[in-house]
Structure formats: C-alpha cells, structure tokens
Image 1 (cartoon, one colour):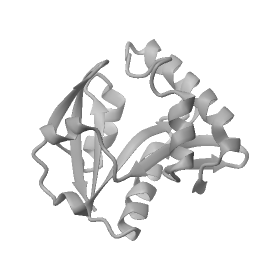
Image 2 (cartoon, rainbow, N blue to C red):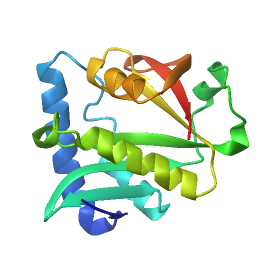
Image 3 (cartoon, rainbow, N blue to C red):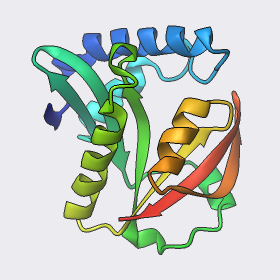
Length: 164
C-alpha cells in the first residue's frame, strides 16, 4: 500500500469513497455520516492544513485518514490517561467498503500509530460512534480504551485513547 499526504486531486476519489462508505453503513443501520458530515469542504480544509493522508493500492484509493492536534471541545468530557501534549488525534478514518474484512483497517491503523509515534507523540486519541460495531471492534481489539464520551448531532461517541 502506498501512503502519502492527500492533494486536491484526491478529492473526487475521497468523496466517492465516503459515498460508498455511507451506503454500506446505512445497510447495517449505522447512521453515522451523511450529506452534512463529512463534506467535501472538510476534506479541502484537511488538505490545505496538510493533515489528510491517502492510502492507495495500485491506482485505487483504499483508505484515508486525518491526524492532527485539533479536537472538538467535547474531548474535554474524557478523563484522559496520557498527557494532552503527548497525544495526537485521529479523525475521519475510512476504509473502502470493497476492502473491508481483509485486514486493511488494522494495517492502516498500525501505520497511523507508527506515523504519529515518529512525529514524537506517545498516544493516539479518537472518537468512535457507539452505534458502529465495526469501528468499535477495530479500535477495542487494537488496544484503544474508552475514556469518556461526546454527544454530537448523530448521537453518542466513545472518546478513546491508546499509548503508542
């Protein structure tokens, strides 16, 4: 797999992948993402801020993610175990539905953790929709522990953390 920073040329494939992911989640009754969030403008901003990364296998986008030091004020609801200045946050992690159940999510998550570690951080924080059993399983099986919760427009999200 080829990992690199996202560019504006990646916007169409990203938006297409998001559309496919939303359709797949809805098949399972998971109403996490929609036309409002995440939007093309979110990804444009991520690219501008150099926080979005894409993962290609040959010429096909198989995943993307955003990592940054930014987080919503709802992250203040958590009782974090690790120091704030040692943590980096994972946002908008998405694996193509065509590539799910093939170990891609786990492999990309390991890469993200290594990337964050190489940047000098000691922990990863993220939020995951409580009604998305697939994401919950991925994170919990890879050592992420709940530290609190956030309530957003779509419902409750677990705030999770892992030392790396």
